[in-house]
Picture 1 (cartoon, helix red, strand yellow):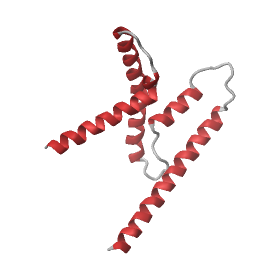
Picture 2 (tube, rainbow, N blue to C red):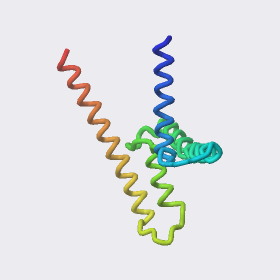
Picture 3 (cartoon, one colour):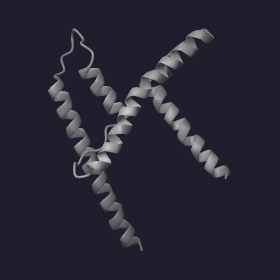
Picture 4 (cartoon, rainbow, N blue to C red):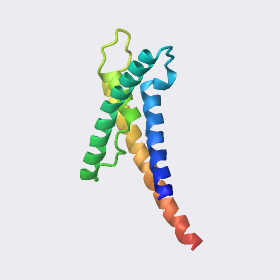
Length: 128
């Protein structure tokens, strides 16, 4: 019972740390309670969009298991959103190149994970 509670709390803490790092909450400096509360609220709301989209991508990737890609992570989605959505005056990144790079990286991660799983299966059999 206690181990289950500690494990659940650990996952919540890891998610909270990831959210703070992804949204920049870990870099904010505030001097009053009101500004801290606003900064925290804005950061957590800004984390919801990538988290929900990544969750939907994970659900959809289960339906399309034949595609050899790792599902989009929150950090990968944030990179793509920063490139594709805002119109910056000095943005030298081609959106097609960014999408191709993301596709390549996710395919490479899928292959690496598959090789790692195969290697673990081989070593587990040889140890027995």
